Length: 306
Image 1 (cartoon, rainbow, N blue to C red):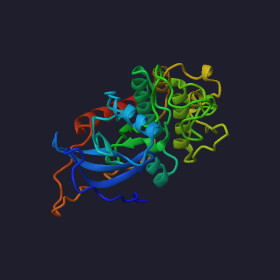
Image 2 (cartoon, helix red, strand yellow):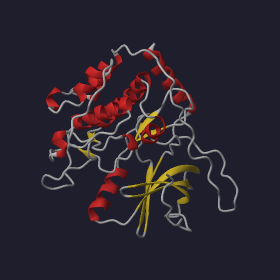
Image 3 (tube, helix red, strand yellow):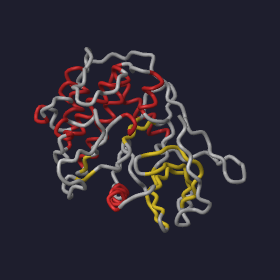
Image 4 (cartoon, rainbow, N blue to C red):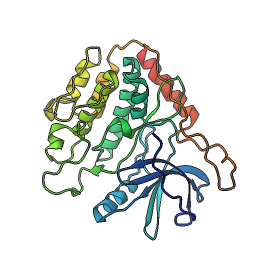
């Protein structure tokens, strides 16, 4: 389904971000393809919608994150102009894992291993920075367009992420996250903790293997196969029985013997090129991660399975 269309501002935001076309929507606003005049490149721009002080605080907190890792997508800049606030980040053109599941259903276990490997790499970097994501789910796992080759995942949307040492943005037992993906203690309002993200990663892995979304209030049904012991550990209702860190879970994953199977789904370029105001196509967009880096990482992932 195409994103809802909001009117495009006629002037660049803060004289810097020229919005080209809307490519998505989120809980805090709309996402646009934009020309960043200061860097002369095309980026993704999240524009804050109608907001209160708490939402603005979350938006400001998100723009402050600067976690540099190939599988993490955090802001590269921001600007404010009157009531408009925008966060810029790399433009990822292959859609989300959620779209991939909608189109293909259950994914081959060897493909799931690569996605889970990259997700755990991302979480290890996020947690090392002292941050808990709190909303790991297929819609927030974006994909670079790699055709029918190995996937290249980027963990995005840090709108409800929180530094563990910071004061919480919610009061009392209110839960922050998405039903079905939240760990039991997170749903009960416990303080943010990295193993809550590992629980969500296990739920995502179950969904990738079965093609079925989680049912809120019910334990994930992990299918048989070589991934089952690890995924069951990730979704253990007792956080003390989950892997202690994303790095520890990643080590366990890489010790598994999962043969290459298929066919693998293709990840196309879902955006194409935007039209400029004079009706001409913009030149080739600067891809978030260089083709060389994607190829090298994908090759390493394939070697891991062989």
